[in-house]
Image (cartoon, rainbow, N blue to C red; front, top):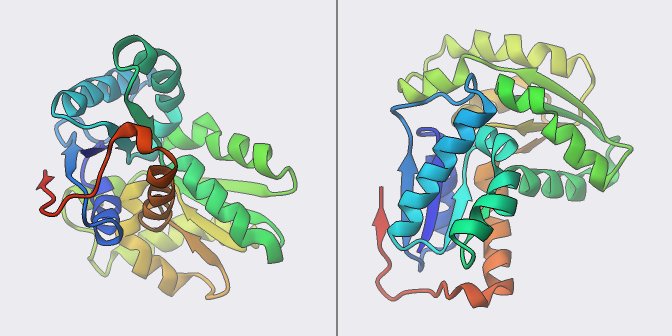
Length: 241
């Protein structure tokens, strides 16, 4: 079974697109709506929450967990992989959503100038994780980030389709567009809910990268390369929320 964890409802967009691409696997989704949003939590709190979620999902039979939350990926993933898993779950794996976005961006930037805008939570922006990961792959890429504090709450409250959200999105996008970006990364899985509205605002030539597209592709490749996990397609797969 493959587990998905997010601070709330944002990861559902990734979860649903993964099921479309890989429909024959068992899945379990866990959203921590009680403690959402994570964007204003400390690193210690986020790590604690992520470990608690991992324990729950592993105990339910998951062999692999997708940390479908950029904030948790930026604050807890490395420590989970290097400390938590070897100590408590040495045969299990946890993957994040940031590196797939960066790797996909690098591939798409081959014929572009390499000016990347990132919309994210304050915690993710402050971590500079996107700057660090791009630097590992291509030092020529320039990364510009923007904290977008209202978007997570709009999704959690079911208000992401309101027409008045356009003004909020335009406000967040304005400083990034002023930097003449040729790519925009939605650096929070919640932001995928605004993808259509964002596409209506930005220049059609600007490439848009979101986890609901990058993660399913990368996960499919990962499963092919890691048969030792024992995650097999099923004739009658199960999905749990």
